[in-house]
Each structure stands twice: as structure tokens, then as C-alpha cells.
Length: 305
Image (cartoon, rainbow, N blue to C red; front, top):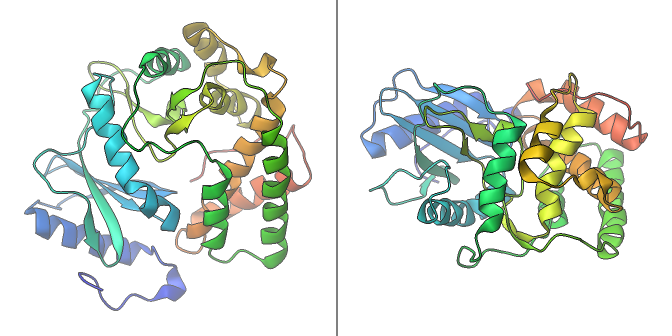
């Protein structure tokens, strides 16, 4: 190992102390001022904004996320090539950095002074993305269950019966997905197309989080907003705005219940590699898990803390 020593894994592989040490080491290597470093997000990845340096650090939170880093950077450069508004890797820095066996990428800061993003913004950006004919080099085919199984194999503090249930859902969905007949043409997809993955800027919202990007069914990019509308507390009406802007409503397609179940499984499995590292996730995770297991489709979820 290099960079950070003496980590206590009883606190989880991504404890706050370890994250702080990684940020300090990254800042030193980049000759960047870490003063006021702010943890923006800590679910699949830990994202820090360094306001004095004008950069964002993204620390991959699991084996699955680390494996996706080359694709994420490739996708970001491809979006820039086509002029699609999205976060950009910081220029002039050889990426990624390897610190204490963790992979860190460095991004340009987005000035978040624009109006809050809406489903209409997401619909317009996805229409632009889906209209591009080519694809990033070596973009993988959509294989949504492989990363879920990888996260389950990398889980912290997941009781064996819970693991067995989630693996059974994976097997059931694998069979159901094989029987789907899609109606939209396949192509490049964002993979996790939610309003939460838009960052407001003075020139309008920009896309972020390309970990799930792939070549696959466009229906998958239309699913998260639809699931968010029915699953999450205080549905904001974003799905209606999204459908109006994009021009297609995936909920009217016969295969939507399968993709809804897949999305809900993804939203449960996504944080299992860091449940010990970030214990604030556990109450909401348990609620999501229990309602997925009982197939309580009316239960309302909340965003992870």
C-alpha cells in the first residue's frame, strides 16, 4: 500500500478517517489546497469538493466502482467530444490516481448557481445523448446484473439470509430480462439517468455519474425517473415533465415491471459495499430491503442520507 497507513477495517473499508487521509494525499500529489474540503456524496463513491483548488475528487467506493473508472473517464471525454453538457475530467492531470489501493479521479468544478434541474432538463439531455450515432471506444454491452452481483460479493455486514434473497432476485431477473422485447432502438445509454445526476450550472444542467454507461436498451434510461415517481416520498412530477421532453413513456410498455424490479434491486444493492463504512445508510437500506423482499410496491422510500 502507498499513501495511507494504519487503517482500522473494523470501521469499514471507507471510514471517514481513511477518506480524509486519501483526500490529503491526493491534494499533496496535485499540489492542491485541501482547505475546506467538503464531502458532497458518499454512497457508491465518495465525492469531495475542494473549493480552494477548484477541483472535485471522486473516490471509487467498491471493487465494482474501481473497475468502472476507465469507462467513466472514456465516457466523459466522449460526451465532451459531442458537446453534450456533462462534468469534465480535469485537464492536464494523468488519471486516475492510486492511493492506498483506492482509485481517485479529478474533475472540474461546476458552478452550481443555476436553477434546480427538472425532469424536463433530463429528458432534453437524454434526447441529445440518444441521438448520437457513434459510441465511446470499448463501451461495454449493458449487463446490469453483473455489477449487482459484484457489489453483493463485496458487501459489508450483509447477513447471509439477506444475501441469499438478493442473489435469488438476481437469478429471477436474469430469466425475466432474457424474455424482454424492446421497442426503442438500442444505443449508448447513461445507465443511471436521474434528476439527481444532473448538476445545475449557469448555462443549464450538466450530466454526471457515468458508472452505469453502456450500449443497451434506451428503455433502461427511461426507467429511473418512472420508478422514482412511484417509489420515493413526495413524487415531484418529474416523470410527467421527463416524458413530455423526451417523447416516450416507458411505463406503458409491457416490459416495464421487469425493469422496475431491476431498478429497485439496484437501489438496494448499490450501497452494500459501504454499509459499515457509512452507517447512516443502514436505516433506509433496511427499509428498502424489507419492502423489496415483501414486494410492497406501495411503500415509499427516501434518498440515502
